Structures are given as C-alpha cells and as structure tokens.
Length: 149
Image (cartoon, rainbow, N blue to C red; front, side, top):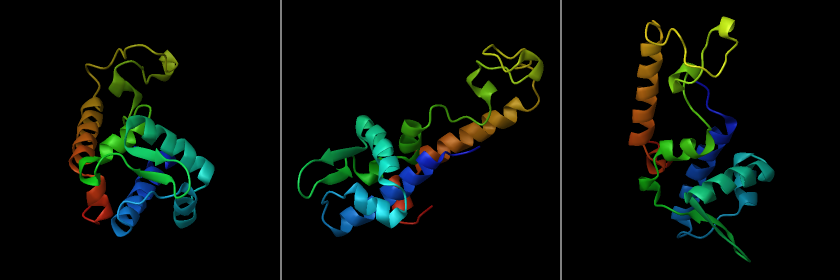
C-alpha cells in the first residue's frame, strides 16, 4: 500500500499545526510558516488545505494574522478522515473495489474480475484493507501529535 505525499504531508503538517495551536491558544497558523517548518512548498500546501477546508477539517481565516485553524478538535479527527479526503481510492489492489480486473489478458479493464470468487490472494488484500481502516479510524490527529502511535 502506498500513501501519497499529499496524505503524508497533510498528516505531518496537521500535527505541527495542532502543536502550534496548543501553544498559541488556537491562533491561526499561516501556510508560509507551516511550509517553512515542514519543508513543503506553499503551493502544495494550498492544494492540500483546499481539500481539507472543503471537508471541514480546517477553516481559513483571512486578513492580518490570518491562516488556518482546525475546524474540528484534533481528538475527533481520525487519521482515516484526513487520508480519505486526500486519496481518491485507497485500497491495496484494484480488485478491492470490485470494478477492475487485475488480469493482464483483460488489459486491466473496468470489469468485474472473473477470478474474484476463487482468487487466493483476495482474502489477504481484504484483511489488510480492514486492518488499515480499523487502525486509521481508531487513531486520531491528537494521538499522532502526542506521539501515541
């Protein structure tokens, strides 16, 4: 399973933002400051925060002293919530969605895999997916920030 840089950076930056907001009594944090501290370009953070803002995970504050604040308390934001906003479809293989064949003969067509019911590896991928979902839903941004995971 690969996690995109978008999700990796988002989790890192949100944890940094949570720490900063705890120290600064929930003052907005600028993307420029987050960019500098986490070494991620402002342009990339703008893309990430646009998606996070749409989902309500963060809120933007305009004007002098503006920036971003969390839209939800960090102990209520699961890691899954963040990654799910940023990843189109996070499954270990295409067949997990039930819409794509992984057979080279099928040319990776959008079709139900003819081997889905008898595939020896599909239960493995299902188990990994379920473990991922469970872990990411049980752990929060606050857990990540506090180093509990």
